[in-house]
Length: 451
Image (cartoon, rainbow, N blue to C red; front, side):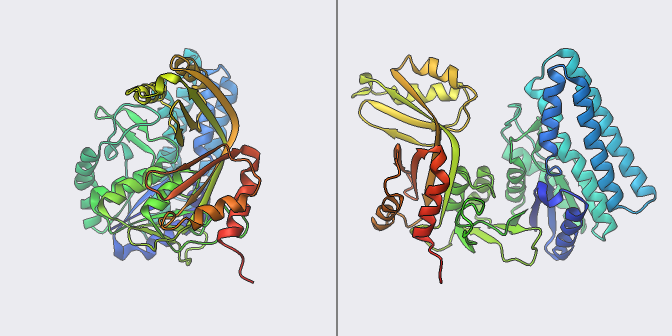
């Protein structure tokens, strides 16, 4: 049994869904379970509709609903022959869009949107795409069966970033998905979407379809999890920044997780964890190049000093300086409780005897964080910083890789330097507008072009 996940670009239009059907059909002997994202861009459109409605821009919101309706109906016409199946699918899609329009009207009347209502809105994308995909698969010879994600992805009620309940998910998967597979059918489930024990719709946060696939794979003890996207696999760097980036054929779980956490867009960071626990290999493939070899993420990949680079801009650095830190236990606990209270994740941490520096991606609660952190000491904020990370399981086996990295950057200013606790990631905080240049320099150093 394998789990196959198709991202938004891999089900973005009729041609993409047609390719997905061919990929699944070729894997029928391996008993696939399919997880699909919303059509590319649909989730962003749904979130925008909810925001517009809550802000009183109902006409704009309804226009967005109709644009999405037209897109989905057009894709259905391109995928399905005229007849009863097409009529049924279009009727189901239209009913969902009518519901979406009513929800927009309700948000407009209320004048605000709650996290619960935003989840109800955002979840529509995967619900719609899974209906389309099932009908298309059946017409192309795949015995697909739609499974409502809310019946198998059980979560808590932390809306917009719900926490899955693995034991409840495992029970639901064994009860609902496994019998379908045993009958030779192909279950198709929307990713990203879940529900509480009381059936209230939740979402796992952006990129959560990867997480859904991994959780289902772990629950069923799958032999592999395949993530189908729009790139050939994991690369040595972002090809949009470094044109000479190379495909990595095999990479270790811990390295892939670090790269995902520090900006690699191929993989959602949480994807790795359920698979890691059971040693299930994860493959990254390109749905536009199904004959490609992809990247295998596994425990026993080679240990390299540097496997890949990652980088991202838009980082904020917070520095807290307090003489009270000196020889005082409990200070760091109090500091990180502030971030926990404001639901803000910290990426990089550096400490000295009387100061702590941290980086955050999400500055939504920055003002509140500054107010609370100022109770602990003097605080400074540095905006528009960037992160460059060098990842390799053998990074610290000698000092050469780290010294080469610093030498390659030359006189480029480094604001912070941190070696991860696992010793596989050297992270440098630099000016945000220097991230691309730094990535190119480092890639030239560690992955020189072979003439």
